[in-house]
Length: 169
Image (cartoon, rainbow, N blue to C red; front, side, top):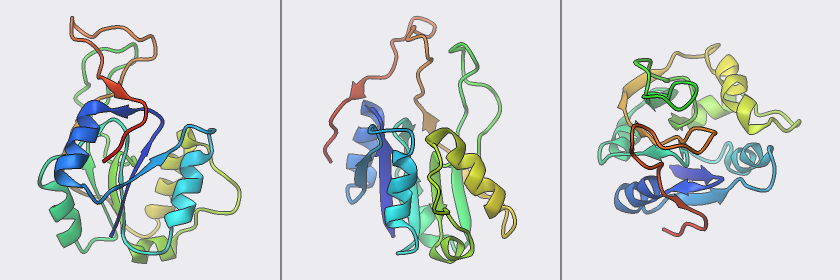
């Protein structure tokens, strides 16, 4: 199993959780341009089961063992997105994104990343449209999402998550 942690700027809580629960993860910078995430996936596609833990997701001790034991084509831990404008997390659970996901090798062989790069903000949707042709999502639970609002404000008096510019496991 390949565990990838793509980041443009890694949240400290994400990095600490990776160090504790997935020290074998490969950190992959996606800062260079909007297609860097796609290239990171392309480089690791079709080799082994692929786990993605994005830069603002805090995993728990159960995530990697659950992914390892799961025989589903696609499984995920959902998370609550923040409301537009940086409000409190919504009651919705995002379980169709790449935030904390395992894509089995079998599934990777069924779908294609294509040869034309896909920007990071369309990658979830592009893959999901192919994945649902073969399987539904298997949701193991919910993880914490440390996303910051675009305007850089504090949320209810709590400072935004600390960012680590050059993370090392």
